[in-house]
Image (cartoon, rainbow, N blue to C red):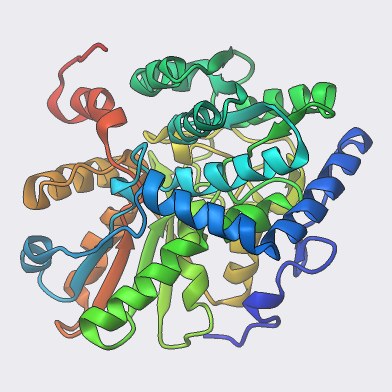
Length: 407
């Protein structure tokens, strides 16, 4: 493993860069709002009352801390390393996304903005945003690709029950990238009254930093819990990576621990075939998309390529800039799981541990299934069980069982 050029605590720099990645690539209309957000976040981070309110809500409303669960039957089934699962699926709304949505809703209150917009792919961030808006009495509009609305119908209904307006985006592939585009257009138009709760460690500074910081609690808890359970640190951390919020949330607290290896798992789709995957580190290139400089999937002319994944939440052409930095530094390894591997992992974890994972999460579990048998029985893996699979039952039934389920 190479030595990091910058300590994790010093990133991003004052201009929002993680090495050559990150930054602020947005219309001039948004610069004042982003600077205001950056300033207000710095003040909130230093405000004991803000932190106390956030901690109280995380505990009593959201359900933190989440357990670190020893997957005994999965460990026995795979042979090799002990497998622990960080149970973010047990949080209110069913995924890690609520950590960030709650934190940003509190920031919106400080900013005096009562209208919230968000984008969502798999729907979990949309549900989390709708939830916190209901909790604080904020107006909520969520942009979602029409294709994703069809494959995540349950979450669309949940958002509407929570009082959110869900706007179908029909442009392009009608998935997450297009939903982000529409949210950005809305924000440019309504920037004085509206806060954009961006859902992953993506976009213009300060969003990658803010989203990471609100999810750091995942790794902070996991680090304390594994030391209590095993009296030592894990050998390997594994998490799925779309934008990368759940992964950076788990990884960040361990970045200075040289003995701990880390692996992020992207969406391999139908294999690394142009237009049929969303694995940005498999042939991606440096570019700028939706506010940030990072690795993305683009053709020789710089046009964004089509992407595909069975998982709506991983079906995106760019990756978070902090992940791009740690990949180039050699600190974090990135690989991919195909649709078939993720679906197989979905079924394996369901049948062996009684835990139905989100299809996003199943990509990380697929890597656990590959890695654990190759490791010594004394080794320890922590995988982030970042979301539960209620929302994916119809999709999985179609692919695995050949059955159509309608909600």
